[in-house]
Image 1 (cartoon, rainbow, N blue to C red):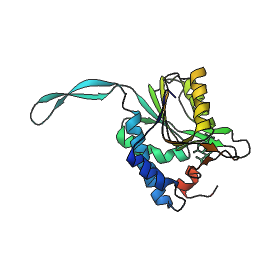
Image 2 (cartoon, helix red, strand yellow; image 1 turned 180 degrees about the horizontal axis):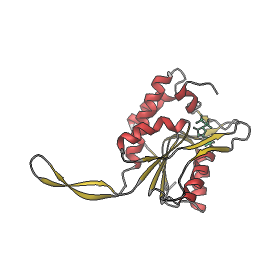
Image 3 (cartoon, rainbow, N blue to C red; image 1 turned 180 degrees about the vertical axis):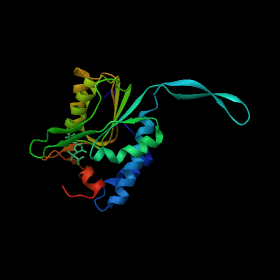
Image 4 (cartoon, rainbow, N blue to C red; image 1 turned 90 degrees about the vertical axis):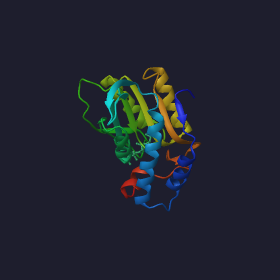
Length: 214
Ligand code: PRP
């Protein structure tokens, strides 16, 4: 699947195993989400453009570089909040634009409840972060919103996805949205159950991050 990257790395595999474990505490779960978000962001940003700068070291002047594009970090509330700080640590100049979406429990359709994107000045590159991509409905709703804003390029970072959700998102990207968009995931699981939960999955990331019950 072009544009979809399932990152194969031993650190990711080990941290993901702990994340899946139902006995993992909320404290450890949050730490694991941060680590996995860092590793995903490192992979997802490898093709960002840079501009050359000049740096005065204590000894001499040497060429340096800084990021060229204006970068927007777009967490999908709530669970996406768990991935914000680690990505901001890597890209401290990023702007953070929150999108509030929850999945209706009956229909599994996304419902938008918060968006404050300004009418103008879209970012050049949006990094959409959400630990879970199940049906893909939430990510596709976010893509619609970012397209309307006028964002140039989109990278989606999800810790876990389903095969069905990835196919749905890919179809939307190719149809009309962002043909050059990329999706970075730690693992694509095979099954979406009757309740549209990823199996084997990790449960509900938002509930496990914030120590709430569904
Ligand atoms: C979860 C998850 C994604 C969405 C994935 O959020 O964090 O946002 O569901 O499902 P989808 O791909 O089928 O749209 P949820 O609706 O549980 O809200 P929360 O983050 O507030 O827990």
